[in-house]
Image (cartoon, rainbow, N blue to C red; front, side):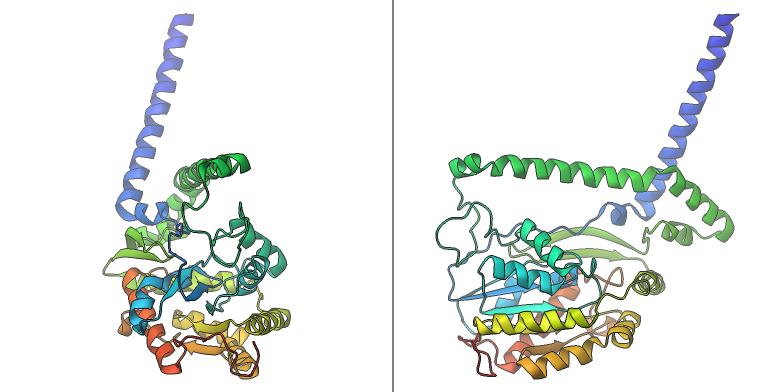
Length: 380
């Protein structure tokens, strides 16, 4: 009797496992066909390998990875003035320009030219804490394992193996790499197979009879597929994207999703603008020329930022009071070849347009000549 019961239980368990396996396989096939490329993809900061033996040093950063649309190597080519300069892009996700200014000041780095943006994509209003996080990331590699001259960023390979071992750097890098690898994959698995997500997907699909709506309910943009990414060794991230025919309609839904988040926060307050202007003046006093770029935004997001934060008005005010330059290219869109594939980030082709436009405006403003760090208001 027990044997018969055991066999019955075994068959039940086997059937349950088989059913679960079929569901997982079907779900995986669906994601790979319609959304897997975007589910797996994450924009990560590439390592820098640029040489720093140059007469001019330029740094690009900003509070959104939209700034990865500025390609340093291509920008240098587009400037075409023959100046021996190095340009690096150290933009990080949702870290304010204030945090980057504080990081550079802590590292005693005052580049000849700083190109930055202002947008409403921020982690919060604790800018001092953000500065500490950027310093911890140390994108220029100037705070960890350094001795002697700190006036230039550390070149790749400058730290000897013995120094690395003695400081524990190799161990930390290995641990960071392993934890990052595991974390990214665990996050992907969670997003793919969480029972609540699956139930939500099935419920939305049943009520809407629309696969795209059901996938988007899980924040899986199925209107495009990320094919690959590239970098130039100077911080640029080029995203190559394949678009579906219905991507324009999906773009509007992605912009609406972004606006839902933005409406819940009010982060660019009076203190933000005051701190930002203070940092600009301090860096100008040390010889840095500051260039603000209002990067392309989806029209709905641009309108929200101007209505809620008066970004253009605020930046013009800083421009008038400090002499910092403002390049407003926020109007660039599809007709100009600028695709913001998820309504926020530019693809590789858009990055080419953005970089070319910035170079054109820098040449028009005469900001490419040696000594650009002189404050036109008379400060150093």
